[in-house]
Image (cartoon, rainbow, N blue to C red; front, side, top):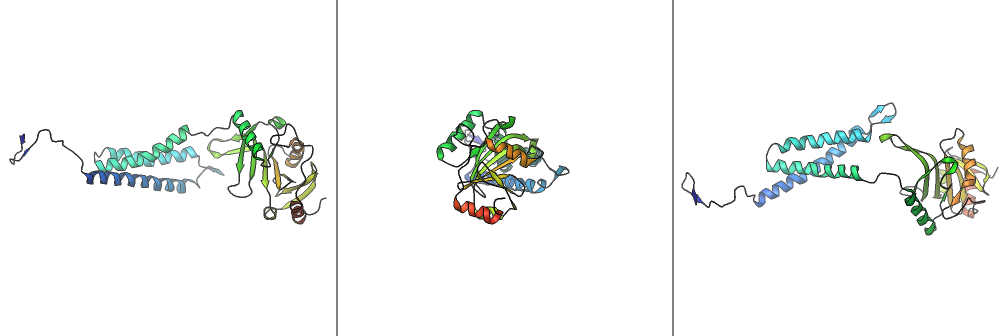
Length: 274
């Protein structure tokens, strides 16, 4: 037994600094407040840096945005840790936890291009599903097949194939050749300037907004875009005979005719065949 200066006595083995439930509740509330603060900082950094450009027409890179975000989160968290206050400890932990999770995701997240085996698996799944989808083989005109993915979160549904991507750091990627197979509707055609061309592979062909060669087959539209040739339309017409459906061993000599409703929409909105 020990006796303090006021004559009170306490057990020598009584733990000192034991937290009450109120302390734990306070630390937990501080931790949650730190998480909310990180979310607000993230929105602030995004809103403040998104319009900034490093060069004329070039947006601020993602790595710079991450560095700004890190400084605004880690700096205050370290400073609060040195206060040696349990509640500030909780707040600092709330700041660091989501930041650390984001850094781990950026460091170990799968951001690479699909391997050849993964591309083959994607192609097999698309062929097995019966989804109308076309591509140009594995290496048209020396351009390597690098990605296959489904789209349709907004706009027409379908499958996109990309050849030879060129990425510039944090500024995004461009592609030399792309093939989009989309579901089609009259509303989609009305939204773009349509120029009728001579038939290609036995089906109607148009250019929408001078962006790509578009072929109509079944209920679908195939958009073939050549971004590396000086004369894009000529390059697209040269590539078109290489088109084949997923699962086919070689190019299609002719594509299936479009459904009557699709053909009527093309003639109504793009004019008769030249």
